[in-house]
Length: 149
Image 1 (tube, rainbow, N blue to C red):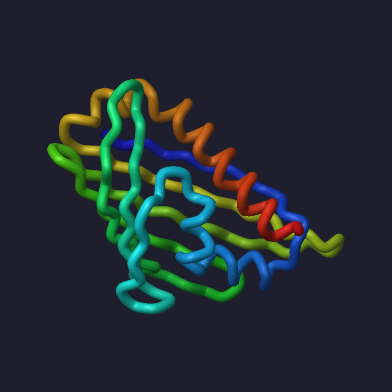
Image 2: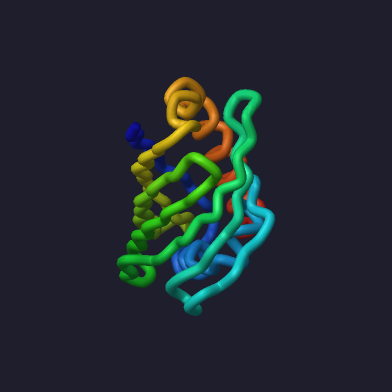
């Protein structure tokens, strides 16, 4: 089952600062809901995170292997992730484009493609749009709080 999500977020901070934050797994993991473990495998390139995802009344713990596949500092980053949970798996491709605006804020354009396989897929089809909206709002609210301080 595949889904696509995208959006644009305005952050009152310079592009270099936003870039540095978004490619730092330690910093970003503090804003991703459900992350309870992070291990950097290759600095600035590969990391592994354990993420607990609640879909409806079902909670699954995914071990996510994440790798930056393309980096064009400070303009664009693309990452690929593969996650496994008991009876389920997910593949994610996400891209971020940063555009600096003259009045001191950065426009972050993001898009994500998600493939979900296994037992959690049918639940994900029903709940994913609302969950994704809630989680992305929580994530970007946290990012703004950290960068606009």
